[in-house]
Image (cartoon, rainbow, N blue to C red; front, side, top):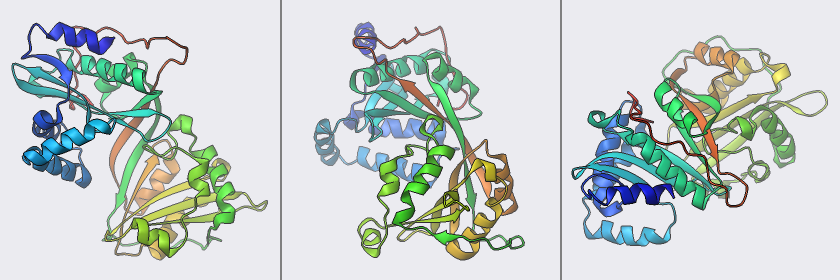
Amino acid sequence: MVVAELLSVQQSNKASGLRPVRLRQDLGDIAELIDLCFASTLDAAGHAAIREMRTLSRSGPLLWALNNLTRALTGWMQGFVWVEHGRLVGNVSVSPTGFDRGWVIANVAVHPDYRRRGIARQMTRAALDLVARQGTFATLQVDADNDTARRLYASFGFEELRTFSRWRRMPVHRLPPSSEPLPIRRLSRADSAAAYMLARRVRPDERGGMGWLRPTSERAFNSYPLGGFHALWTGRTITRWGIAGRQRPLDALLITESRAGRLTMRFDMLVRPERAGEFEYALIDYLIRRLAGQQRALVTDHPADDEYTMEVFRRHHFQRERMLVHMLWRVPASPGAQPIIPPAPSYQASSKGER
């Protein structure tokens, strides 16, 4: 296997090369490496995660107990690191998606002083070998302008599903002129099938689904979270709003999610392709004036190929923060087949942390 071959090569020099993550030993160094490589692209949650990793790395016996506990939890902080003369200079994390035996590959990072040596490629090979033995597919996100990383993943057989843009509107901007009112109504459980049919058409799984690690699942649409008990139990309030056409199918769908104690509302907006341009402005206007108010920030991950909606976001003072390409690698389905993993070249690098 790829991992076994790579590890055996390194046995002659234990101070350098590829090895599996050792949580208790590596967590602090991994936090520093991720911060160094991705600091400019991390959001508040990402920075908070790094702080937690640093805290755990200094917690002594507590971390030791956690490390032993997680041996029974497949996928928690799995992955590989690359060590050069005792210094951790590379990392790749592998964790379960939570559905369909899939795995997420993340934090493919190489210290700037050690790039262009094939380290990212060899770590990715090891991660895919792990996925091939334990799952059905691997998925990852990569910055749209990181051409080097995209070429790296494409060389392993990853396919690009769709590019999503992160948009944020802070509650300090003046509102543009109000739109003409439309028959927007709050949807009920009886509308779940219609909502799922629209989502399956506009956000099919083969094009990234509803977004990162959010497949367009009929089960998710049928389990409609109405009522105060759900909000009290989970701290989340999810509501669906829609515009119905003449024959009852939904022409547009707006999904909002708010969390207790947070002044940010997340949302998704879907419009039937043949009605594009008719409802987007009114839905965003309704979202800001009626649902979020001027006290809530708004955040969405929206397909970057939807140019009309992009312009509607700009007119309502949304700012684009990131563009991420969602990529997928499938494990061969035939029994005994081995994934085609190309050999490492003399170098493979990225100016953006190899992600």
